[in-house]
Length: 351
Ligand code: PLP
Ligand code: COI
Image (cartoon, rainbow, N blue to C red; front, side, top):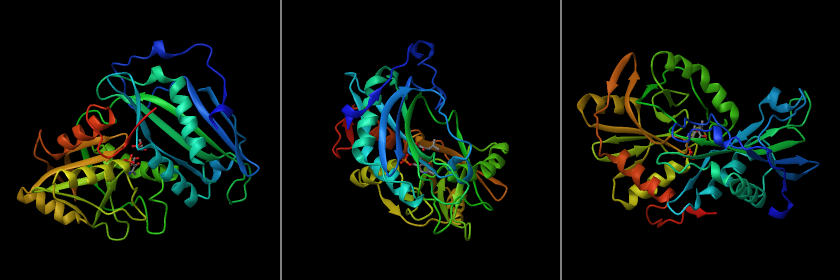
């Protein structure tokens, strides 16, 4: 497939305009993007093009019915300037899992991986080298086919574009445990990375950010008694020395960072429980001092310690632990990602 990728390079790179020492998250885009079309029942016209506006008909189904999915990945540089990815085939598999649920055609692994590799080869200089920064990769597929009939489109576009990025959160992360709204329901699309899942979060998240929180912690839609996940990350809770996270379900994204943490924690003999956890258990632990840490885990967020949470109009602060599970697990996982340590799991992929 790689040889079939048509390449059209940008006339003048924008890279000199970028301050790589002051990167925010996902706001600056690299020179090129990979594009592939699904037309007449097959994926074709794979190309690398300058990052630029695309043309779509107003009746494209993405605009009306939100048939769209995405992934989030990162590329890193090691000390020898080698380009590294972290578990990229897991992202490919999850993209296809999301695709199945949204009736979007499956994307073959070779098209996805060859396009990604070619893009990273061409925009290699855009991969930041400074500590804590990386090239955020955003593959997405959407319905480009036309029609007002509320049914799946007959044409789709896969685009992969990238953004040199720093930390997802700036400063402390305070979260609000949701008591009214829901992100996902049984039988719904919560487990998929469907664009609409995020759009639906914006309103309750706005209510939370207006009150000074960075994210909502979603609870189950039925009872709002169980902690599920956050807007852009899975959630881990440490009570005494036990690390607890909710099991994945129809409603929760099966995070790649989450499953990596579970594996590492098990190997480091950290007591781990994957089980349902109630809000009242967390509140009680905060009150009696056994709640030691809470953190979010995701590709964009990496491991983001939570400094406090709000629930039932009360504020709960977490202890300021600088050498806790979050710090140590973050170091362990980022050292694997950036080739600062051995990778006993075979997660790191060098391009
Ligand atoms: N949960 C949600 C809703 C997310 O958007 C993400 C981000 O991708 C995650 C969890 C974490 O998943 P991963 O670790 O695969 O990035
Ligand atoms: C990621 O962590 O890659 C995500 O997709 C989260 C996103 C909402 C920024």
